[in-house]
Image (cartoon, rainbow, N blue to C red; front, side):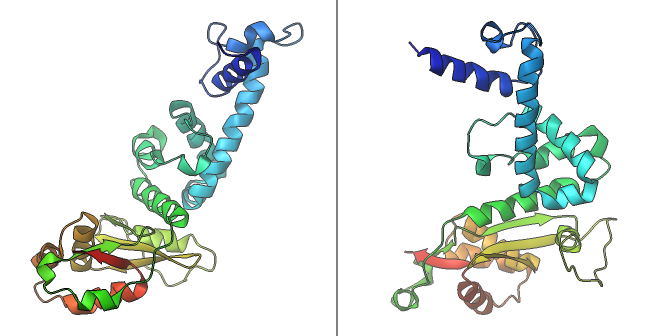
Length: 260
C-alpha cells in the first residue's frame, strides 16, 4: 500500500492535472480544511498555477505562434490545449508535440490556416535543439565501399525535414529579431516549401531547398539505400547533380554517416 504521503502527493497531482474540478473528482477534499475555502476553490488555485507554468513551457517552444496570434489569445489557446492534453511526464521538453494538430481544429483560429504548419516547424526546431551531437563523417571508409548499391546514408540526429503548401519559412523569418525587411509573402497558395533543419554547434540552421533535394533527403530519412534515394530525386528533376548535393550535405553535417 502507498504511504499516506505518497497518496497525498498522487491526489495533489491528480487534482492539479485532471481538468475542471467538481466535488466528485477532487481527491484532496478529505485532507483540506474547507472552513474558509472549498476544496475545489483551493485546488483550483494550484491548478491555475500549474496551467500557467505549462503555458510558459509552450511559449518557449512556440514563440512565433505566440507572436502571430498575440499573447492573450495564445494563452487562451494553451489553456484549452492543456485541459485536453495534460502532461504525462515531468519533463516539459517532451510536452507539446500535438499542439500543431490542435491548432488545426481550434475553432477560433481555423481561418489562420498557416498556423498548423508553422507550429510543426517550431516543434522541429525544438526537437533539433535537444538532439544528440553526431560524429564527423568518415570519408576514408566511404572510399573503401565497392558499390553504391550497398550504401545507405544516415541523417544526423538533429536533422528534420518538412514540406508545406504555405511559405512557412518566410513566416518564421519575418517573426525573428532583426528579420529581413524585403521578404515578400503571399498566403494565396504556394507551389511548395521544402525545409531542412540541422544544428551546427549550438545554432539551428533552417535551409529552404528545392523539391528534388527534399525527395533525396526524405528517402534517406526513410531508410532507403543510395540508389533508391537517387531515383526519388531524379523522379522530380532528372538533371539533379547528386554528387554536388551529397557533398554539400555531408559538409554541412546533415549526412553524418552510412551503413553498408
